[in-house]
Length: 356
Image 1: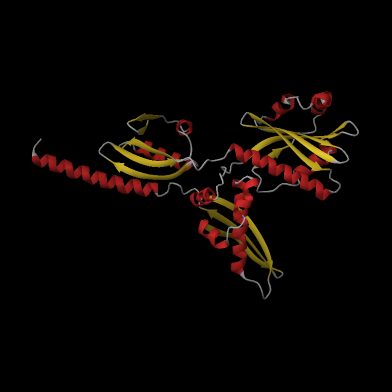
Image 2: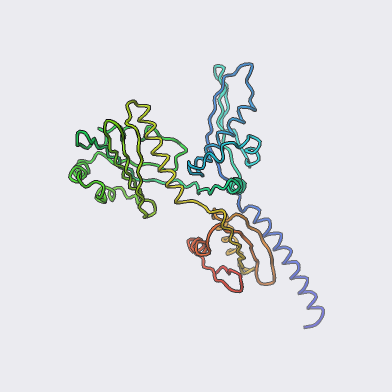
């Protein structure tokens, strides 16, 4: 090869390298753009001499933060985060928008959407020694069975105050969407036939009609003094048995409180299934063929979807590959499974994972 050709090739390579760096750094700016968004925070205030619009918006930020914490954190850890100041909350906010704002009959009404930085939120929770959960919503089949222990009788479906009030007490913060069974005479007969063996009965004959893999069967054993709630909770094909105890409800408010506390418990169990151990910080280097732009774009989209990735950057580019460095809050096996779920494979060689 003559010197002139060598110099030309060298400059072409340098140009391509600089172009690639510019292109890829621009593209990775959008990685992690997926924030934690809380929608439809609604506030109404009387419009008088004390009215302050900024204070109303600040109240919206506080409410949005509390709603986000409810979705991410198990109830037992809420006390660790209750003293976060408004100034600290504002630092966590990436963006907010006013969806609707109006004055009507001396009443001010506003509806907000608030976006929090996922990275900042997770960092805050880690400092508080709290492991967050991925805020995944889930449809679940829910079969409530009220058992009157003193009458030795079963109260089913619309005859049960539990059944009738369960959906009425919906809270938008709940991650679980409950699908209650229809008043099917066959289902009623099946439950009554298994009255003496309800704690061991699998309820498959009822559950299979609704095409939902996740379900909760709750037996509410009620007497004059107390209510014991025995629940069979099946998330992701893993069965959990859970017991709760309450004083017997004598008013609608007490009944609603029982339902609220029971739903919080179910939400906690679901959060536990989706918990992230942010103390695990697995450093990974991923190598991808520099000329395979489609694979590079696919990989960046995958990274944007993976909630267990806490940081991500381009660390090196040579004449053959582009190298990404990321921190993964999970095990190597979990990372491999994540990548394979998106239709790709990774090979490990010389401390580098190669995407193929």
